[in-house]
Image (cartoon, rainbow, N blue to C red):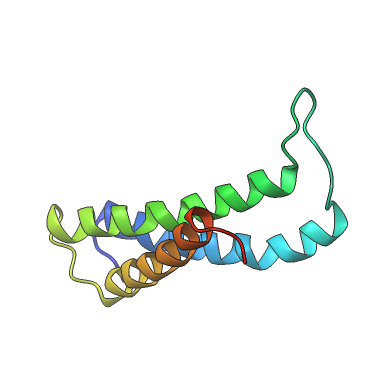
Amino acid sequence: MPRTSLGRWTVGLTVFALIFFALLRPLLTIVPSLVLRGSQVPIATLLVLVAGSLFIAAPIVGALAVTRSRERSIAVYLATLFGLLASYFFLGNLLTTPH
């Protein structure tokens, strides 16, 4: 288990992002085309961006936990690695052209 506050944040962000992604699919089947008032952005797009930003924030906090707080927990290393892989996938899908 992580000993520092940043380590706990890293693991917490990763677990929350995984739960959020697991709940995102059923949620998007229920409300696929709702749009916020006064904008043209669907709620589904905002939910995916929030989930992706959680996966981007987790490895950043994990790197800070390892370097600044000297965190040595295997959970923090795994959460950071998983967050880096998920961030790579998320940013790759966001920045490349659609198929």
